[in-house]
Length: 184
Image (cartoon, rainbow, N blue to C red):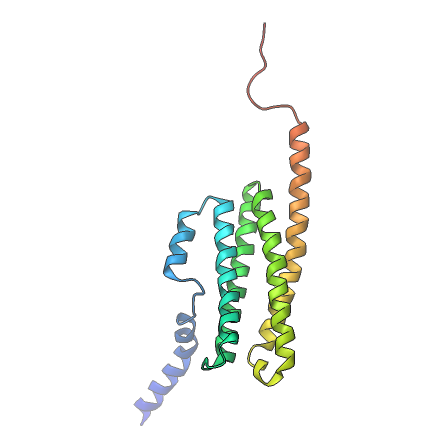
């Protein structure tokens, strides 16, 4: 009996660690490979994150449009969580590229356009879920978080774009670092 009690205690202590190991990665193996190939290319890498986030929102539309889909609420919740995880990872990459001093103006134009698109799709989902609140109970909080995150990040993306535009203007005005001046 004492042995059984010890075993139960050990399992209870290990349960949180076992749960942490089963955390779902929002990216597929193919998506991870694509990201690995663009590790040092801000434009390519950030465009991939946009594509992956867009795919999750498209999957939500698909599930919600299929009246015969089983467990639509859970699938919607899961795709929303994946969208949010991917979007957060994209923001982390933006921060990393910015810290490296990369010029992010081109990627940010794509991201800002995607922010507008994502915001519109999330608002449409919010409006549709308001019409059927019993279905939305599983994902309403997550949807609210996603809307807040995209709204907040969109402001940050616009501010970073403006900062980088301003820095590029000053860089052009600075003397060229092409090499030593000609001495005659």
